Image (tube, rainbow, N blue to C red; front, side, top):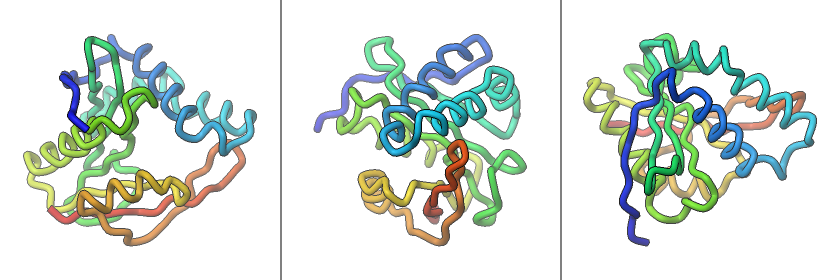
Length: 174
């Protein structure tokens, strides 16, 4: 499908409410049906707490970007390097910690825009690897990443509320 006209905007502290809103919305759209209301609410309150998002935005080793379509935030990307990475997966790597699109904007080529933005950042920083975690039951995302050159190297637990779930760790050599 033809990619819509879009704009990339770096997220700043002034965007924190908007970041919190899209983070909660996209996580709920993607995973809400697979979790209890209690586990989902606990995860959303913790992961997207205002103070936590503020410290992530202020971290010099993390970057957030909005993907805007007709001035609407359609999705966002969060990348980490150095100590901001959630774990050590590969040498000289950039982590794609979050890459989300609202349901209405999926299957329009916009996910590819975000993953290619992450790759561009990784290459500008002279990284040799890019990595991310993807839920074991998110088959569409796994297929998408495989097509882009990511390979599964391991797995880890990703806890939503009180529910430990399995994420596959995927790495792309650059």
